[in-house]
Image 1 (cartoon, rainbow, N blue to C red):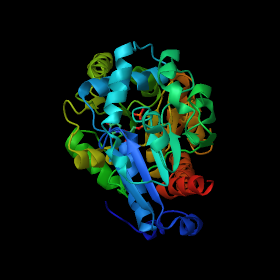
Image 2: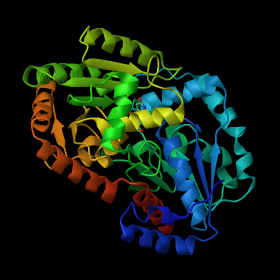
Image 3: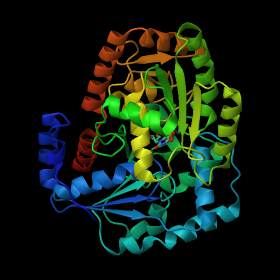
Length: 411
Ligand code: UDP
């Protein structure tokens, strides 16, 4: 696996955190750290882990990443567990238990060596601790990335029998702690965005606007409000269209972009995208974009396009009604673009209302705040600058890495 020096972040993050990371890592030289997760591509965890692991290696820690091998049926089951933990009603049958355990049993070869720390991400590999039982070594940490504030009891019952064996459970927010899923101590860690990734690297607004004009037909001389999100009811794309229509009454030149990727295995996403297209009607100033049409599905080009929307919009909206964390909020704030976000989950942890962005509770409020920003370039600049500072201080990769090292040092 790649190894990378933390020095690459010196100019991007706070100097102090880089020094702190080096101090935290010093006693961990040679420590063997295993991260276990369900997929190497797609989703926030896969986006976060490669850089965190290569930085740990650059600090002298023997960090590795193992991705579970499993059948389609196994991943269907673990998607049910994931949805169930987020509160959805799911059907879990007795044969699901045997499928879960037999798949995990087939993944134990990574434990033929001893580990000092094992970080298990999300529910998919969580049961390995039960299978290894007396054979396990090191400190085991369950890292839950999802919103488990109101889980379905069936999903909790499925996982509960072995979760108590963990030495520590890490959640994103305190609200997400579910008693039966906690083993050992609890800790809270925010995720992060990587300022060095193609999605977040500096892209000058004129260059961004050029991409938006040539690839997506967006008029760079007129204001643009954008939401970047999967097509999902919790992200409220229809509410964003309602807000845009209200904004349009007061700022007639405004344009709206709804930007979202669609996974092949997500029929709900395609359906909801079609609903948004229909709701937008024939307004030429609404651009409902997806990977089904003009948005690229090639990872690098896609990342650059997302970057262009986040860097080249006048206002980014994230009108979610429920949101685990909402990385897109930090991504836009990092580009100094002001964000109007729904007052939900992790969004309220990133935006301080009226200071580093706005928090809203309805399409009407959202429209009012977007108009305030569109009519006041100075406010946009100031709020954008404060937003970027928040992300620089709290939501970049180095802080996230420091949090993990601090956790390891508590054992
Ligand atoms: N994303 C993307 N393309 C899209 C929509 C989203 O690459 O068309 C990325 C986005 O940049 C972010 C992640 O997917 O990195 C979404 O994370 P977030 O926490 O905002 O929401 P989630 O989809 O996990 O609920």
